[in-house]
Image 1 (spheres, one colour):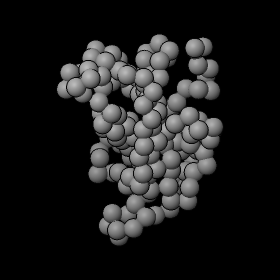
Image 2: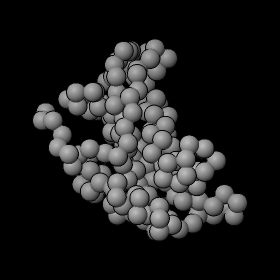
Image 3: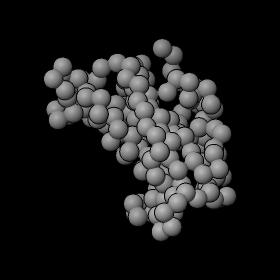
Image 4: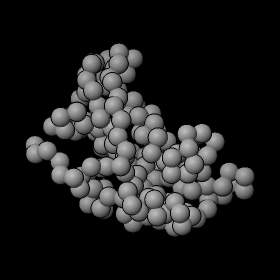
Length: 150
């Protein structure tokens, strides 16, 4: 596999170590472990966009989540997780894509997708993406063809 070009770099990434408690009876990373990894990536990416590291600033609610498992990760493996919004953005929602690769980018372990909706928790209903937030998300957004691989 060729090294990714600059266009393939996504706006937020972090390392996840596969620890013993992440394993299933087959000895590889349990499928359910990817969803908390995606949640961590989502919060780490989104919180700075809306004002800082305080989770009380989250104004999104999860509407949909999926993950496609492509290769087994085993105890001691390192996954580099990435997240990016995908174009086009909705009026009230954003699709986020995730990928989990080894540090050398030669193995893709999994690809994920979530749809988050901007939500006013005080009013109990969805709200439009603000102009300021939309500009930040658009700047980071990847092309729609990435979603076909998620």
